[in-house]
Length: 201
Length: 175
Image (cartoon, rainbow over all chains, first blue to last red; front, side, top):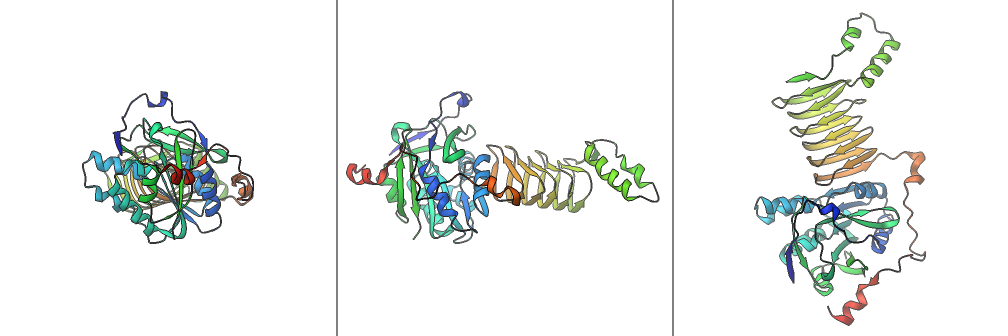
């Protein structure tokens, strides 16, 4: 496993972000959510206006809890990391779907274990969990938000206010860490993004 | 302290013993068109409810309910609010814990620390906002089809030839 701290740089906006791509799994994920009129979804951030509007139009109620900024603040204030998980105080089996984006890339193995335990608690039976991660060759220079555009196209926007560690994991390591869930589909894109769609039993 | 951003011209109307319906409508439209607002200053703390017919900005702290119906409400960057808000448009730059129902738009700036529930026609959230909330959009029935995404059904052919499935690679490559 490789660890790196993603630097904060003022000129991040001028630097090339990973190339946009059309997300196959987001399309599948949304189709799954649309089967339930009362579906609620949890997005773990980074908070992004486009995504909030997108999901709020798709589901009855969209929840966003930016765990990226909470992790960043916990680290900056040198607070115990266990406090981070208090923010995910949602009711048992509340959500039809959870979007982690690449939050897992910024957590160590133990923290991922705790996150997955909470996701298992918050997800309904047969609900979907979507996670993204970068290939090692495409290690990101910054923390990015995944910005949903038309036709499930995803663009990247650097989040200069976030300074988080980055952990690379192989596909096998990732699937093993999320073994609580059944892997439905996974894809790798030319820009180095890997998408995983899991389902709760 | 409480400040008026502009002189409240409605006092002139209030002085009249009888207010006709026409005057009432003028009163509303006048306050809507004027850039008139009340500011609750940084060193003021309020507990209770506020309702009214002009814009309101909180720079201090408040716990309770705000009901402005056709006017706008804002929490400044030093403001703190806990409770329920009903207003036309709402802008949050300070701390808020509670629920917002806006007739129009809610704006959460990057300085905001928001925890709560939101119901509005639209919402804007700046990158960097410390945000935890649930969002329900007021849907306009006649625009229902316009807001639908162009998602094809599962049975339709997928245009994406770009990605490769990871699952077979996983077993073959063992990475």
